[in-house]
Image (cartoon, rainbow, N blue to C red; front, side):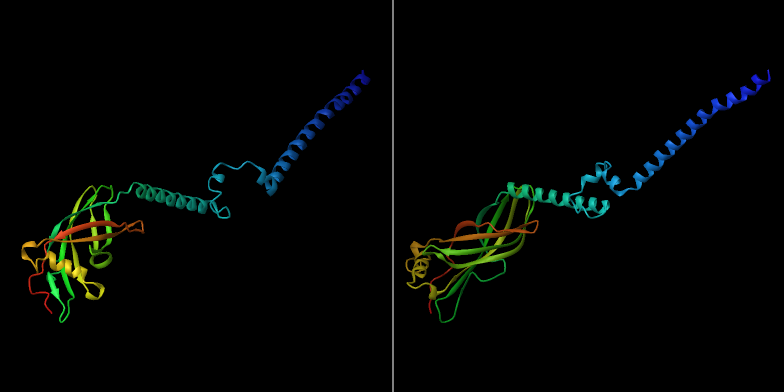
Length: 254
């Protein structure tokens, strides 16, 4: 009986040893895995290989060397500029050149005399105002920086003989804007070699035969300067008009 009693604890002692070893081994393996995971998380190479969130790639083309908040700021600014360029491009593509209507002549807006002759010379100026209406079919208002006119007479259609200029004209959208344009014709005998222009004016003004008096005809180019988003556009509008001759008999005498 003593032998049986002495062998029992020995047998129990040998059966419990493998269980303790398995517990220690599991603990070591778990601790090793945690340690390896911690080392990998601190490894910059492994960190770079890990999958990055989608937002990291959204603005990577915009200054990739900058922090994320600066990348987003850069991309927002870039998108705003692109949108503005698209809007300007669409407006420029659908822009229609306003049509110009001539409604007759009136007094010069600056009060200049209708006819003024130089002393001891055949040079003279004819000043008046052009009553002009502008029809704008565009969706946006048009701010004209200036409108310039270059006048030509029929006897020399390529030689400027006058004109005028007006600044800061605002044309409303989808409507008609009327204004008086200052205009003058400057006769210079030195530019009229064979006096063709003077002869035509004398004839049409009835200075030789009053019964044959008729209007004077001129052609002119209107050149408005339009600025859209800082870009200057200067279309040329060719017009012609006629007006009663303001010269009376004896005014052209030297």
